[in-house]
Image 1 (cartoon, rainbow, N blue to C red):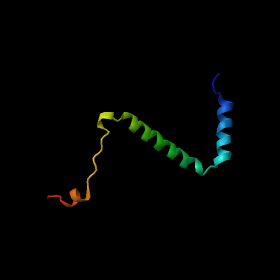
Image 2: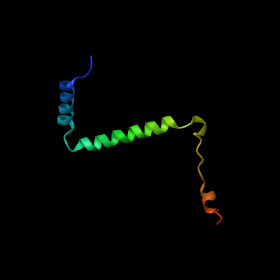
Image 3: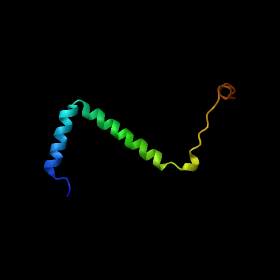
Image 4: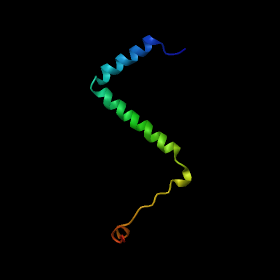
Length: 64
């Protein structure tokens, strides 16, 4: 039991009715960014997840 052509067409028509043609590109862009962030987060090594923040003092004491 899979999705056939009529079901896919019905889903596409329903999405167009709900969101309109102008919002679809924005929704797809957001979805793509979310998938990219998820992939990036899942590919990170848990051992390398420590992040170091620099203090204001460290930023002002930069030696050329």
